Image (tube, rainbow, N blue to C red; front, top):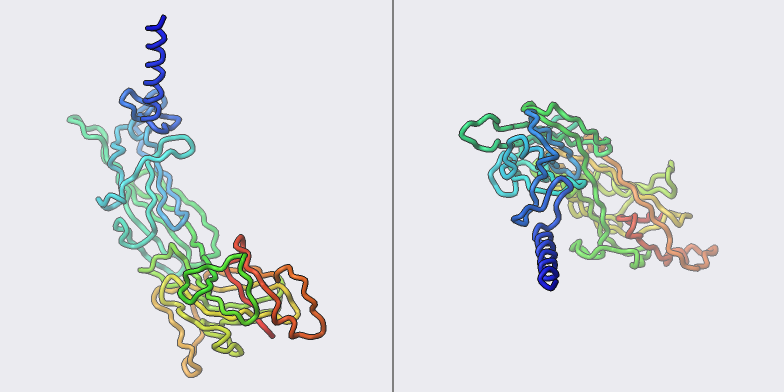
Length: 357
């Protein structure tokens, strides 16, 4: 009786130990005797067809996935799947996606990364690479290595909706469209380190520091430029109070109200701004129009040589600012409005600016 009980306990301990050593196995895998997750061969068969990878371009990346267990059942080496480079970061790794074991690759759309190349036309930049899936090596080889051209096209118009197009699952190629995301952040300091939050109270006349950035933008190919910044009391509104026009402070805006720190020289634009109030309004919608340049697009803001921006507007970003909930007595004296506090909502705002008229 004791022996039987002891054996049961030992078996249970060994089973738990094996399960722990295996880690998390996918639904199409089994925990093998050597405590590793291995494909459940009963779920897949050799179909004789070519691999059919899935490609998306979200997050300005090549996102590639293909079934690990299908590849193994069809004679492919899952430890040797890569882009056009033998650097370790260019190889696919195992990842559980929706319960199944997948070989995945996530690489940024940047020229020279894993030997990625870029071609630009008037509307898109297209990043191309090659996906290699090598066959298992046997003395009687019957499966050929698989090579596929892949490409991601990013629109120069940031407002364009991404559409995914899949090419034939063969050596011809696989393509997908994507889009960039513009981030706007307000900072307390001129070093652009400490971000403003909803716990910070701002007053008219305070200086804040604004950064506009596309973090995934290929700096070898593009530069970001803020073409204009304007505020409106409502959304939508025909009233537009321009703070920045053609990359330079508007004609009625002084250097103290808006200072261009950098614009059109990289993937980030920076500004120093005074907090203003739109006359007669306790709310403001701020809009920023951005363009993408193939090369440096610095605007000379001197009155003698100032020129209009000819690049098409790539996208429009907007945020909303509301007065803080304080019980102030706004009477006939406009001076009382000058000390009205404003707050920045960390949940939905990243820019803050008020214009005094």
